[in-house]
Structure formats: structure tokens, C-alpha cells
Amino acid sequence: MPLRKKHSLSIILLAAALLAAGCGESSNRTNNATAPDAANQPSANVTEPAPANGNTAANANEGTSGDTPVNQPANNGTNNTPEANAPAAEEPSPEPAPEPEPQPVTKLYKMNKVYSFVPIDKAATSNKVVLLTFDDGPKEDEMLSSMLDTLDKHKAKAIFFVNGYRVKEHPELLKKIADRGQTIGNHSWDHINLKKESQASVQKQVGDVQKIVKDVVGTEPVFFRPPFGLGSDYVKKLVREHGMLYMTWSNGSLDWDSSTKNKPDKVIANVLDQLHPGVNILMHELPWTAEALDELLTKLESKGYGFIDPATIDLGLDEKPQKTAK
Ligand SMILES: [Zn+2]
Image (cartoon, rainbow, N blue to C red; front, side):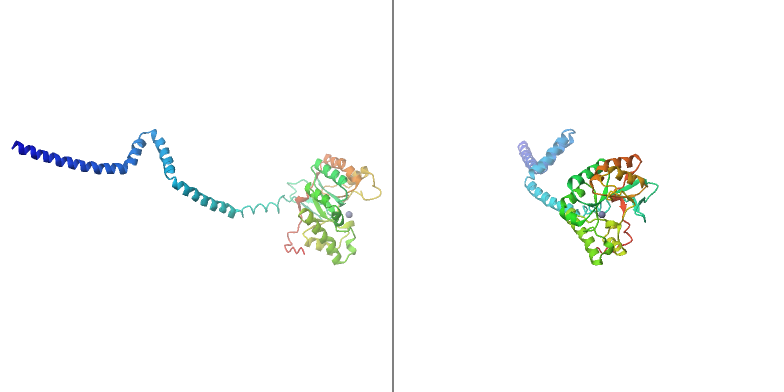
């Protein structure tokens, strides 16, 4: 019996061992399968190493997906391209950029019927200002440069009403006026009395200056002054159709008159004699005016006057949307 018992015991043990082995195998398999998790989990449970493992895991993933990285960059690449395209598609947003051009400066002044300027908002804007204008150029570099320097010195802006035939002779001077931040106005091509001209001639006198100025500096004038201050209803209508504000002046320096020739002090006195808030001062590109300019501007400033930036002038053309510029 003891033998039998031993035998049966050994059989039972053997069977148990086999079972255990089987379990072991299966448990090993599961262990293997879950080995990474198990390995991570324990360490993940360990508080501090966890981050390290997390990092390594992340790195390992990136590393092991060494193949995927190749794809990923590719994906990133394609992702980037769409993104790059998207901004490119969004480039219409740069369209707002052109917007500043039409309205770069707040309009502060409007012209009245006697060609002087008044604040649009009298409460917010001082009326103690003048508009500086210089006609009949561009003539000569040294004289013009001196005037531009003086304007810069006083941080003053002006309109240079130019003649087309002079622009044709000295396009570089026209460009200099624009490059120095000053405003160019149209003063007809030949400096003739437009009142006596045919409509066809007026069209050419006005239109050809618009064209040459645009060709040289990129934009057309928005201010027009007829030679000798002589216009007609047709001239005014045509000028408006070109999108320009028609003006003569309200303060003549008489610098063109023989009484003032070579007399800078007279230029200054003439302007100061007619000084009122908002006056539109007519001067010319002349040596004695260039010479008078620094002292004139200093005296105007000492009397509390500022200088109108032509860009702040409301052209008052809004009510006429039908701009048939041709
Ligand atoms: Zn003139």
C-alpha cells in the first residue's frame, strides 16, 4: 500500500508539476506580452522615476518609430505645406495693407469758398494754421533742395504745384519732392491761361501732367491750381473728374512781382501782412523765396501758426462717386 501511495503521490506531483509548468508558460507569455507595460507600470508607480520613464517612453516611441519619424517629417512637411498654403491663402489679409494707403492720415481741414482752410472739427483742431504752396517748378536742384531742407527743419509740409514741361526737363527733381515727403500738385503743362483754351486743350494741359507725375512718382496729384489763378467752369469740372481739389490762393506773397524780386524781406512782409488763420499762401520756386523761407516759417511759428499737411485736407469729392477719370 505504501508503494501504491508513493506511486499515486508521485503521479499527483507529476500532474501538479505539469500543470504548474503549463501555468508557468502561459503566465510567461502574458508576462512577455505585458512585459513593457509591467516594466513601465512599476517604474511609473515609482514617483520620481516616472517622469524619467515617461520621457524615455516618449523618446523611445519617437525613437522606435524611427521609421515613422521619416513619415512624420513627411507628414509634417505636408502639414507644413498646407499651413504654408493656408497663410498664403490668408494673404488676402495683407489686403488690409493697401487700406492704410487710402486713409493714411485723418482728414482735419476742408477748404472754404475763398480757398482758405478751416478745421473739420473746430473743437479738436486749431485753426491757427497755414497752407504753404510753391508754384512753377521744378526748376533747379540747389534752390529746390534748400527749400526742402527748410521745410524739413520746421517739420512743415507744402504743395509744389508743378508744370508738365518742367517735369519733363527735370523728372529727378519731381522725384526728389516726393521722396522728401512733400506733396505734388498739378499746375497745367504749359503754364498758360486755361480760360482761353478749348476743352480739348484743357484736357491735355491737365491730363498730361497727371500722367507724367504718375509715371515719375507713381501717383497722380490730387490738388490743382490754374496758372494765374484763371480757370473756368469747365476747368473746375474736369479737375474734379480727375479727383483733384481745385484751388487758387488766399495769401499772395507777391514773390513773382517785380516789386519783390531779390527782396526776401518783402516776401516775408507780404505774407505776414495778409496772415489769417487758414490762409493758402502762394509762393514760387524762386531764389529770394528760398532765401526768405526759414525766417518766414520761424515768424509764423512764433505767432502760433502751424503748417497744414496737405494729406490732412479733405478733398470734398465724396459726394461724387462717379469718378470718370478719363
Ligand atoms: Zn504759376
